[in-house]
Length: 613
Image: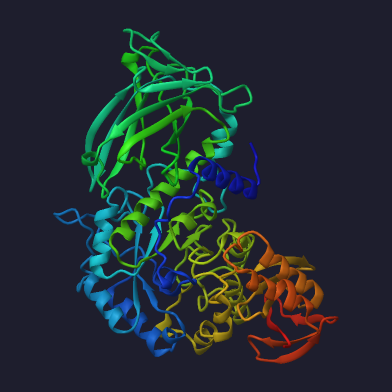
């Protein structure tokens, strides 16, 4: 079962639309601060786990004193290595006091008093990546703690997640070469396990409470498509059986359990799990589930059943699904098996892990920008815009504090390799929703000044979060100058909220186009090679690329008038002015001209081209 990413995304979107009628309300913040890509500084690239209160304050001071704060770099993000490995007596997160003796509320006050915003870190796992206290199953309590600390931003990582241990499709740099589609879906059989019962549990602040058991019988369960309620598994006890897929692995028989949850059983601050008891002594079997599709944002689930000692109901074994979207009133769970739907269940296990924290943050009534850092494991660009303001599509850009590679890392951890994976996802970016190719590496060792400027330009063209990742207190004037280039920043922070499209690759040069809110167009020519190249594109081809960008996928937020600035006004202009964002050189063009420039190896030429009024 091999699908292109676009087909997969469209199928998922259509499936959700069909079963839901309309998309449920997003849980993420839509605060003004989250509309444009976030700008700030993070501790991970320069320090990794070696952080403390003094270092964070020195970087905050450097943002102010360098002028970067006033150019938009306002978030100071304290990454992994700051929390204690254990919780306090009340089950709350706490800092490592040897590193942060004043506590996080005091640190938040320090940042706020200096015109900055406070960013924190945790994980959609039982532990953080450094094995400190994780937020999985503590989302509401931890969100409240973040609010008490004055947190304005949360980077939410993906280590130690109990549901997902491999990517949906292979991901460069992943800890495993396995993937769910290749190793599970494409090797599946059509046989589904019989289901005996379900047990519903509440999880709140680490405490599990069993709520109710629903058994299979005619009063709770309806069947279609050849599925049956069968008493042939012993003790005249009915089971839901014949849920097998068809020979082509499409959906065959299905059975739906209906049950009611009253208001006393649904706590908005709790999560819910369901143990699904199955019988199958021959092999592990897969089972698809669809839960409350009319109200749930992510309704697809799956399990791989346990091998039981026999076919007897007395040997039925549970498999647990988590983050179940139960609601007050009637709830439904449809059981079946479909090769097409299994990837949705896997993908949405990840989505629900992040949705839980997104909802918890929103419940604090504090405006918090939420960064979904799941490394591209479950194609976050297809769903993370529903729960977060930006999402990581790759592993870390560097695994060594203070340094980065330009290209050619065997695990894909380099600037060019990360750029290549991010640049093709332009149609998924928009207001409040951005692809995040990881922190800026400007000022780190391992790259030249030319590469620093190219890296910064590419990130700005891609509407990436601009999170500086160097020691600003000791940064060179060149580093501060690159990070503070207001013309490049303006491309990133443009009000059209568009990620540039790579519309051409020729002779080692990438060509990116980015329509801008004032009707001008940014053109970036990136020389990927090790020798100087001449970049060349006609004005007419550039105009066509700009028109295609605003007419393509991911531009529904644009008005007809905004699109017409490029499909009509820019495309039909007789002349244009140009400005280089790095040299400030200006020029003029006619509609019949070709834009040409020599580009240094690994460098860029970036121009803003404006139609003459």
